[in-house]
Image 1 (cartoon, rainbow, N blue to C red):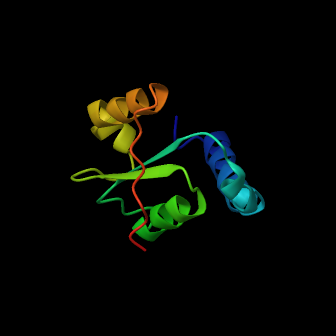
Image 2: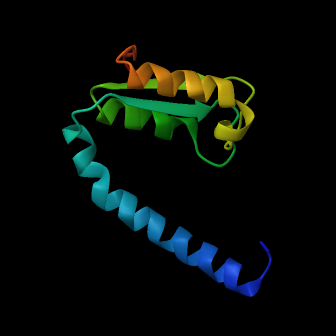
Length: 101
């Protein structure tokens, strides 16, 4: 199904809208009041690791967890790690990690 023309068009449209939408929301990140967990695969070859650090800088009450051995699909390759982070956020046990940038 991924190579159907309709799916390719939908993916292209989604990709084209993603950057402008993220750009519009960027200034609002610092206004978030809830704990935010950022989980990134340490071997992600699609998204630069600096982006996760910048997001962590922008959101004061955020925590960044880089998962060794995982790439872009960290939610599929490190499900237990991800569920652990979700559990910590949901029970107010999120440990805030200062940015290293």
